[in-house]
Length: 201
Image (spheres, rainbow, N blue to C red):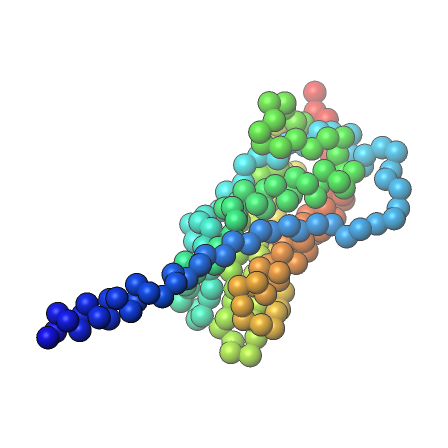
């Protein structure tokens, strides 16, 4: 009799459609501007973007949610389309490539060398659900800018941004995380614009 019950329950579960996984992509873009690009870059050096890294909880593609100070949970069914370091490194390259800060911006896949090298480590990327009435997307990236030949450290900053969102859904979290990343990259651009960068012999 027990075996029969198990078989019936199993048959019912097999008849249900399996939950589908959903993938989301970070596409942080700089705000549109009607101003003409400057005739010369701010820094007459070439920048190469190195492959980005991530701290252990954020290396995978699964969404991560925080429920208490010590409790985190990964979401099997909702995920990033690519790994966070790959997505954020690409967005940083595209953002800085259109900023006219450098004479050129090279992707990690390029065989060419740059005068400066930018690396990044994704330190935080999660939905903060510790407060029942408030949902927050958290994005934090540690950036380092060094001279390619002499190794001079020009910039070393952890940039962290948070964005509140209303609906506690994966899509709402992804949109808020995208906005938070755009704010991080805007701060990075502003910081790099203020640096004194020259080509070293």
